[in-house]
Length: 390
Image 1 (cartoon, helix red, strand yellow):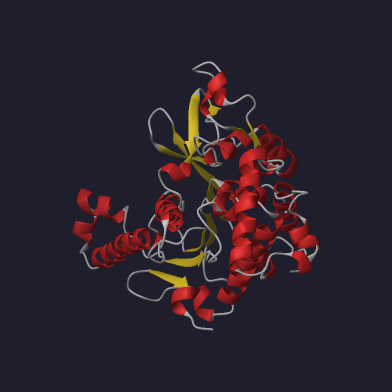
Image 2 (image 1 turned 90 degrees about the vertical axis):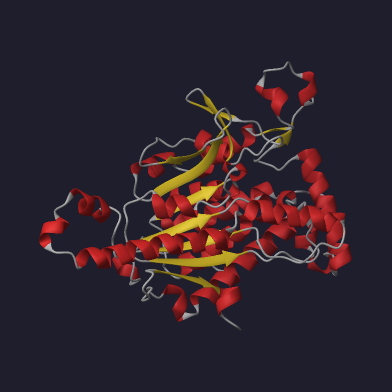
């Protein structure tokens, strides 16, 4: 995968039939390298987002994308993922391919050992095991509420992300977090907030592993506790415009019937964190169909009715804008278990990155993926796994 620096194309120059290109990144820990691979393929195709929204690891990837020049984004993503997956005990699996574990059982054992390393030693530049253990800290202290310390992540974000660039507003940026006290999902958006490393860290502070992050006197946890996919924010909380959204999910809501307790744990996570992607998409289609139908109906009303208070209210929610949702969903390997989201080996990272890269390449190869919706609903979806056979 050779990245060639590209100039910063604007939407019209990309020749895509949309006013806005959105990149929507789900949470999923170590699986997030898949999103980096997807972005590399989009960058090579000169598709650069106007809006990036993320939750958890998706928030971190979003910050690196929004907080760098277009020509530097893939390289900065690569730096982040290589740094947090550095492990002298395991890097031989990539450095010496002949020694890398082959077959499902050897690879499953390798992944389990790698996940155990992360539990004990953390991930470089990301998180470290809290010392002493949280039970030895006084009640009420932030140290008593999590097993890991995330100060390393703040330093990493400050080094790899230009927050002044994010706050300048050239690209819209949104990350989701949960207010610990109220339980409400909150989006930190550069149209309403001055974004700092704490906002990104809050989006990825999954308890009880990571501590809540304090922002303006309130404490926040991982947005995935309420909704792991920020699509709803993108389609409902911006200026309505013709939009294509690349939704990159790390958990599939569809899967096989578990065969043992390990499978049960893995499947539980998939269901919990997939955030019912297709159900939310179907719901949005219904709303969009209603908007289009209402716009058509209002166009038929006589002038005296159009001036009524009721018609003016309905006109505020009716329009003919269109939405194209392009789904890219990571497909878990047979040897991956419930620990796949905290299995930070370089070997797995490279595999996840390649999977995202090639899934995006195959998706972009199909003309339908980037085609403007021409149906009555004003919205259409494209999912390579469901809509194409290769």
